[in-house]
Amino acid sequence: MPGLTFTRAEVVVLKNNPDYPEKWVRDRLAEDPSLLGLGPLLLRDVERTQPRTGRLDLLFSDPLDHKRFEVELMLGAMDESHVIRAIEYWDSERRRTPQYDHCAVLVAEHINARFMHILDLFSPLIPIIAVQMIALRVNEYLTLQFYRVHGASDRLAEPGLSRKDDRVISDPPLTRAESPISTPSFTPNLAPVLLDECLNILRSIDGALALDHRRDTVTLSRGERHTECVSFFPHRDFLGVKARAAHKEEWVHRLESAGIVVLSGGPLRKRTHFRLTLEQAREHRELLRELFATCLREHGFV
Image (tube, rainbow, N blue to C red; front, side, top):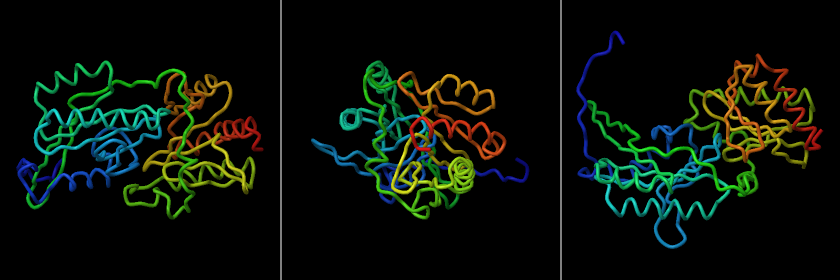
C-alpha cells in the first residue's frame, strides 16, 4: 500500500520473557478468538477444571458448525506433556458433551518435525490441530501471529449421537445490552442491525414474536413460550441462521440459488444452516419470510 513506511519486526521469545507469561497470551486469545485463525469462534470457558486433574486453558465453540475446540497453550517448544494434556482434555470434554464435535488444539512457540510426525500418527483417531505462535515486536508494540502447521479434517460425531443443543437450556436469558453482540469484540458490528432485520420479517408473520438473547445464540419467544425452530448466531459482519423445516434439500437449493452460503453440516443435522449478510436479508426478505413461517408453522408456534 502506498504511504506505508517499512520497519523491521523483532521476534520475541515469550518463554524467556517474564513480562509476558502464558496467562497474558491466554487473555489475548480470550479477548479475540479470531487470532487463532480457526474461524469465528466464541469463548465458552477459561481455565476449565477437568474431572481428574488439571485445567483446560481455553474452550471455544463454533456455533455455525457445531464444534468445540479444546485449546492448550505452551510457551517455548512443544513437548510430550503438552501433547498428552491436550489429548486428555479433549477426551474429557468429548465425554462431557458428546453431542458436539470436538477438536484438540495445541499452541506453542516452536513445533519441531518430531512432533509433527507424532501428530500425523494421532490424526486418524483424534482430530487435532497444531498452531505455531510467533510474538513480534514492532517499535513499542508487541503483536502475536498464529500459523496452523497441522490441521484436522472435518469429522462428524459418531452416528446415533443426539445433536440437541444444550446451550439454550443451560444458559440464562440476557437482555440485549448484556448480549455478546454489545461487546467491543463485535466492532465493527452489524449484528444488531441484522437481528432487527430478521425480527421485522418474523413480526410480519406474528407481531408478538420476540428475540430471546442467550450467551452465544438468539432464539424466539412469545410470552412464556420459547422455540428453537429458528435460531441466530451473531457475528460482526454476518448472521448464522439455523432453521428447522421439513424438506431440507429443497430449502438448501432455494437458498443457494439466491446466493446465500449454506453450511453442509453432515447428514445427521436436520436444520438448514446458513450465513446471512445484511444485503441478503433485505434482498431476499420474501424467501426468508417463507422459510421462517414454515418453521414456526411446522412446530406449532403460529
